[in-house]
Amino acid sequence: MRRIAISVAASTMTLSLAGCGVLDATGDGASASPSKGNDMTVGLLLPEKANTRYDRFDYPIIRDKVAELTGKKGKVEYENADASAARQAAQLQKMIDDKVDLILLDAVDSHAVAAGVKKAKEAGIPVIAYDRLAEGPIDAYVSFDNELVGEVQGRTLLEALGSSADTSSKIVMVNGSPTDPNAKQFKQGALSELNGKVTIAESYDTTEWKPELAETEMAKAISVIGKNNIAGVYAANDGMAGGVIKALKAAGVTNLPPVTGQDAELDAVQRVVAGEQYMSVYKAYPDEAEAAAQMAVAKVQGKDIQFDALTQDKVDSPTDKGIPAKLIQPTALTKRTIKSTVVADGIYSVGDICTARYKAACAVIGLK
Image (cartoon, rainbow, N blue to C red; front, side):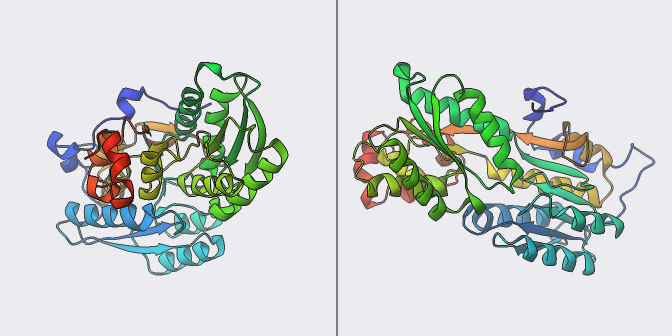
């Protein structure tokens, strides 16, 4: 079960806290003062490069927001582990050695990184878990409501199957990496919607979220179930959805079953437009990244009222309970919602999506 201390309405509070005067609040009020001014270094450790969001959205948004909040005196020291837990451990140690003021950590392996988090704590460096809930003595967590992501995926898949869906409908599940705690939550959320309504015929946990492994797994599922007997595919993210679709096409499937995804990557949005992928999950990365930057600056500067206002949810990890958190709500992205999500938020322009190959399909759904 998700452990959330406040209502959805409160957990989706807007990030424009400066307009309420919260950005200027410190400690418990008049007597408190920041522990450091604007001259700060925030370490940012992101997990992999296969998903383009990290370099395209997360890092630049966090970098720019930290600069904005500190009068351009604060900086972000960025490293990407490229899916290597050992590389991330070395990057984390270097940031401890460099005495950064705070570390934003998106863990490759949430369990393995716990020892590094403890070292940072011992060195007096706060650690905020970003996107994935790391183990160890973290100070806070900012992410999306991950079980809700899985619920949205499962529910939308059922909607695609329609009223004819029942326990004779065979579904393939291509889940995320077993070392990623988010993947477990996505899976739990999806199963809460799918169990008892359809049959999970084959299920895989895909190491490092690799699209090529997802393609291989889907090929195995096709050989076991039969290419014409698959009602739908739960793919936990867009990269793996691409691999799943490749396997279906390679098997000669021309009428593709509905396939889910997550992250609203550009090529996935284009597959949705073309009818190859039924849906993705749009997660407002600017909201998550800006919240992380705000939390980081508030923590370094000792602005406890602002920090508490940003972390009104609570989550539990295997090692710690009641961790202050900010949980952001996801949205299903289908043909009907492309304009109101990624286009409206400026993630992609219509021109980005509706290239020559997709112009006709865009026109059909009124995306122009």
